[in-house]
Length: 159
Length: 159
DNA sequence: CCCAGGTGGTTCAAATTCGAACCACGACTT
DNA sequence: AAGTCGTGGTTCGAATTTGAACCACCTGGG
Image (cartoon, rainbow over all chains, first blue to last red; front, side):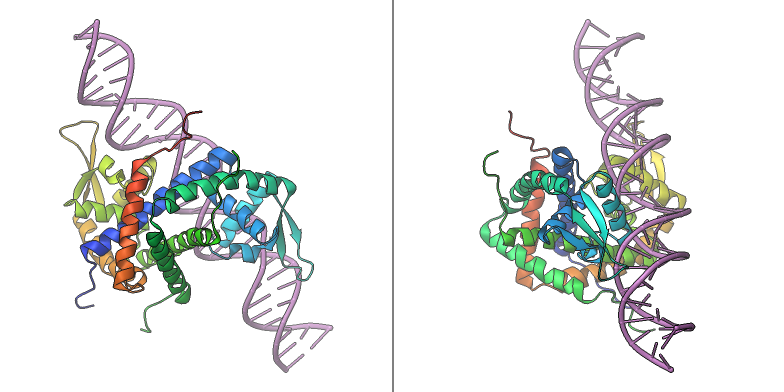
């Protein structure tokens, strides 16, 4: 363990800025969705993903981008079902599977929420940056995302 | 509300990448801290901030970067107090105030956790990027951070 | 001095989150 | 066809989070 790695001030500051931005951004988004449509961010994500997929998706696919755990997804879909925004139907080709789908109400609620959401993301994330900055930011995120996707669990190398 | 703003595919994809990266990064960090030092990320943040301030800080200051709510901070400091990593003492100049401070145990636990933490952040965030990318990323985050700090609650512009 | 108003922290109930345990079913073996 | 293993989802309990209500104390004005 000799001479462990340290981060420079700049690196540490950047990391902290990332955490702060991430946290603040989430806070704002959450607030907007709550006020405009009575949805939590995770719930909005579920609706948005379903919509992007044409209106229905298997639970596993929904869990895809791992914004939440498996059980968390069950919970949120349950909530959305209670309020009538999505429904559940079992998968014909695989009896284990469950398909979540947007109801009419779900579509319309999503449509309502989406405008304000897009506006806010645009304002906070896009408008704040120059086109060059945005391009660079986008590239960086792609890099980080694929890197993170790669090594799921680094683990200590053997004993 | 005529013709609401929409995001381009690229913009939407970037936003989603941001969410995914943020979530994954947090997951990894959380796991490392838990395994190496039995700390949650919020707890580590508290210890790190205290250390950066020389070992003691008022609750309000700790809440500063708003990684958590006021009550959340109370809770976490409470947990850390139970495990003996921090202590509470009342502020002499203002009887309302409470000062949290690192205990000896707190310092040493932090030291242990810090190495692994720095290594992981270095690996996931720094090493993944070219120096140019990192510079751009850093600049973008600064911009976003100050922008977010600025308009706390945008609100709809009058009626 | 006493009161109104604001700030600093804690406490409370309710909602959400997570991982572990669990059940049901499909896929592959023999 | 029965047996085993892996996958898809849900359920359970424990920990955490949040906003609102609350108490104690400071500050400024009568």
